[in-house]
Amino acid sequence: MAARHLRTRRFSSPAAIAATAAVGVALAVGGTVGAVRLTSAEPPAGPVAVQTPPSTPAATSAAPSPTASASPSASLSPSPKATASPKASRTQAASRSKARTASPSPTAKKTSSPKVVDSGSCGASFYAEGQMTANGETFDPNALTAAHKTLPFNTKVRVTNPDNGKSVVVRINDRGPFIEGRCLDLSRAAFATIAATGLGHVNVRYEVLG
Image (cartoon, rainbow, N blue to C red; front, top):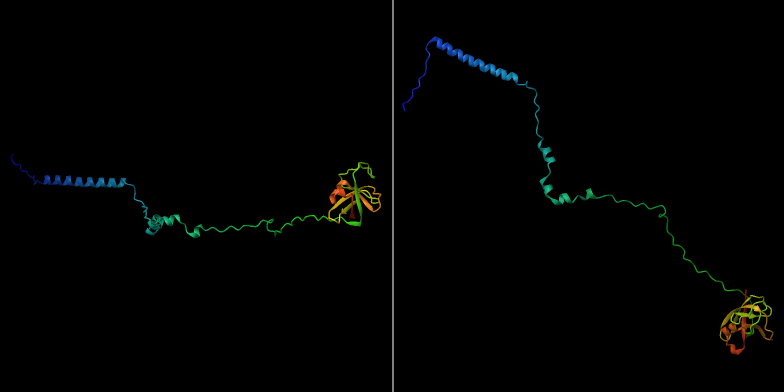
């Protein structure tokens, strides 16, 4: 290929120089006007708020410490001062504040022994025939009763056999015996309590109970 030779035009005439200068001026003015238009279209510059980043100490205090978060004992085991709660004081109820006294134990009632209004010794016998007694009762040989000459009916008499120490309490409901030396006629059951019925009669000690 043949090499192309570029040739630069040179304007040596005054008209060419003037035309070239006019084009340059036009380009310069057009560029300036466009720049002015672009600048006037932008909003007027106002005060710009500058956001300053938080200071390093605040960021450091807000961020959790890696050592504290990594340590299980620091997060799971609260300090004794934080968990210690004041001990609740128990108030004694008014009814409980009184001194307790032991209730008195029940005491057994003392049974006073019958009073002896008269005593003596005499012979005693027994009888077992069915009959009416002096106070109007039907005689019962199995009941603990006795006959006496003068004692009021229903009087209690304790009869004791001094030979064996056995005794029985009988109720007077009849009159007798009418044999000298005897003052009591016991029912068969009463006589059998202090002596054998085969004896028929025994010497006894009697005590009239009031």
